[in-house]
Image (cartoon, rainbow, N blue to C red):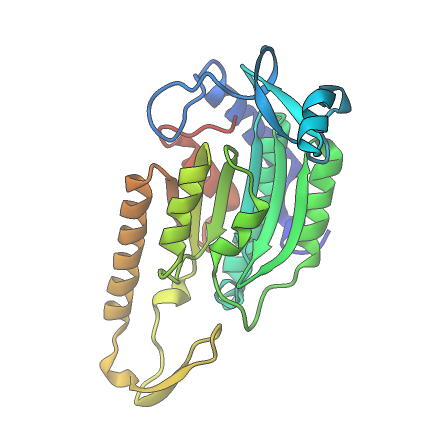
Length: 295
């Protein structure tokens, strides 16, 4: 297994999975608000509605009469589901690869989160996005699905140039009423906030994990310098001597606070971390926050 996935420890994943089981055992299924949600679709006995057939669905759940009416395979959904469909959206834009530790942590978080979700019998899809959908692994559950996710994540090198963070490109591939997790540095505020809010409006639960690197707030050049946007290629001349690391750090902190406020307003679970942290620490801290659910 290629780096950074080679550093994922199976024993650590299993221990974290046991913690997740204890955290959510007997806990009512919660929407991003505070009211128990009792209308989960799954293998119950009371019919809820129909949805389009997706790869991995049991063919015995297909409603052939509804399929004939809509001319699309339709699957019955039932109340009291114990599992859900999750989409993990991983930012694959150039800013994520500018600092190798940032990309490594993001990939580790995506893989570990997929492990926990699949361990809890959820179906999981992963989408790598920049200014387009770069790679996609469809919904699946079980060991085969997790192996496919690891293969996808292990085959993608750290992005180095081009692209942009446009979360909206994932929307055509997402299903209404599902659960979403977005892993990104969120350094591009224009559009990302809007698209996060849109995800929250169509999904049952939306989670956001911001991955930053110490270098995101450091200015080391002195004198005149040319700043180049690694994603757009645009450049401008500045007097770097007048730009201090303190001001850069303050601006980044302001952006993080704005993102946290935005997520709270739209009931999106939010955590921010840096590349010096361990994936286990980041994920456990995120899960421990009030209102989290993996089901």
